[in-house]
Length: 387
Image 1: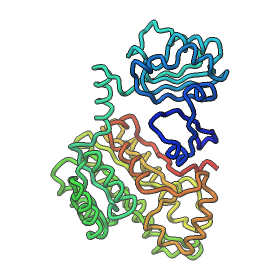
Image 2: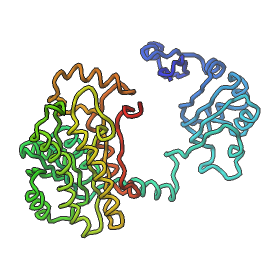
Image 3: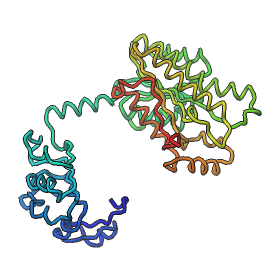
Image 4: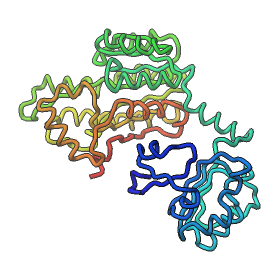
């Protein structure tokens, strides 16, 4: 609450004044806290002494229009008195995720109280709620799934490999440099995850096809992440530089999707996630990179095209479009510090992204929790493309 400019007071008999001052909180008596707080949040154990701690008398002592929040124990509040306080306007609103009777009785007066937000409390469970939670959790569980990540040797690719492994998947880490792929795989193995490393050049159709054919277990998840970037004005760009970027960043994605996607189609099951970029949606400034922008725009449209072609055949295809991410790719930029300052000035959140923030989106898209999502380009750009 301090982050919103609130002055914080508290009642806690187990905290010393020195401890409270160290976190910029002022200790008061319980009566003073109730009488002075515009927002009162309860974090109290339920005992015979604290039952109905907030009763009609306490509610009457609160400032007119105050807000009451309870996510501790249901019996702390006299629910009949709370209902009346909300109806009369003594309280402007309240938020509860705990109740005296759980689940909340269908005829409870709280159900008719105005300006009251109620949500289920995780501490309470029924057989139905347990089944629901288990189903939701299992949808994001990748146990017994096999995933392959290109460009997994560093940066976003390494973070994606880790995120998929943490969700239970066995991960094949591929990279143009085998030692980098091995480094990522070994790091995952050290954490107890199943991982292996393979050399893969996404510009080599035959190598991709050989690797796809050599994987005996069915591949469930494919992440096309391998990519390069350089900055050259269009009028000075050579055919070689243009072709290299398109070949890796766009055609490499197509080749990889084609070989591994073919086998997913045979099984009628699979999830493909391509790493695009916000550069496929806007033109980055001040650095000149028309070849990169065109390639990433192509990745986005390739993603949509494959998604439509394969929508009825059990294979989902999506893409993630990141903002500038703190990865080794940035090391190739000249005048890096000045560029970063300009990028941050143009970003509403005033920061770059981190690899794990992209990996978590990939993890979700790979899971059954995203079963309705195909052909989507998920933009993760800290607000960059909004302005």
